[in-house]
Image 1 (tube, helix red, strand yellow):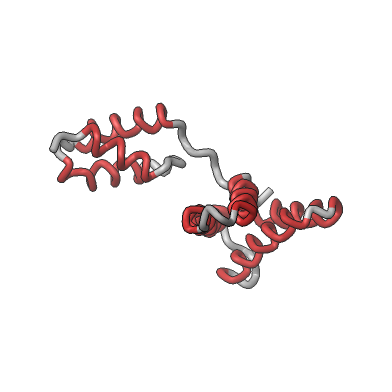
Image 2: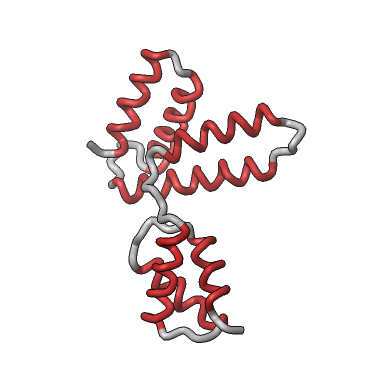
Length: 144
């Protein structure tokens, strides 16, 4: 079942169960798909890119929301949790560190100036990894 079909089925289920938050988020995801391709014939890889961008926007909104608005922060976190159900699970910190070490060995990088080579090697593997964590680990492991 494609991601688009999963979204459509999720919308139907949310309507039946009267889960308004889930319904709103799923409709937002569907609108993102339709904005990119009016016929909703995008491959799953392109749909995942749209969802990752939306998840990033939600994370940024959570960070920028003032602490005096806890109800808004909770709503955004709930939305993010729903979006993350459709994203592939990212590697754990231990798995990420192992991947970074492999990428450093593969690229032959020795200093932080060669961080780009390491990141290119990591991204080339097409593994669901937290890029920020990978970059931080790589810069810690590489010499100044």
